[in-house]
Length: 214
Image (tube, rainbow, N blue to C red):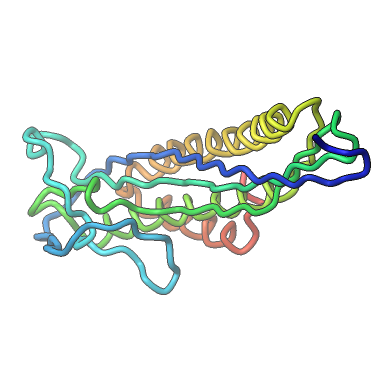
């Protein structure tokens, strides 16, 4: 039983992940180097750009006949903890306690066709990863601003806050997908050099100021 005036904190944990697989084209030939180490989740790191060694999955059997030369698999996840308290036992308020958002590449799910990888293609893929980082930062910033939710039960309060967080996060993930498609379309999967350079400049600026990204 909860006495009036008593605060009873509870904590819930939520993990939400969305993955995106991106296929890319090739315009020249360069043999890739495939890593033999155990695949891991690779978090975006400005000081450690991706390499072809991270594309460790076996290409599909029909890959030699495909127009795309590689596929990078990326995932944006958020992990949230909520604190729930009540002062009267009948109204419960949930607050966001912590939030952690990650942007990772999965080597075990990313592949490249031997003989069809290039330095420019890898740069195109790195920029895909950079764009994911822009939206990771946008999601992190927006989720930290979410308002507390009040309900008649602890679970309802948590559910309401979780629904708000998911709505905000999912909307930004939809924007990420849309911008990814636009990036590939306007750069012709990296083969349009002038557009590729323009997008790299845009994304570099958005990394410094994620709120300015569409």
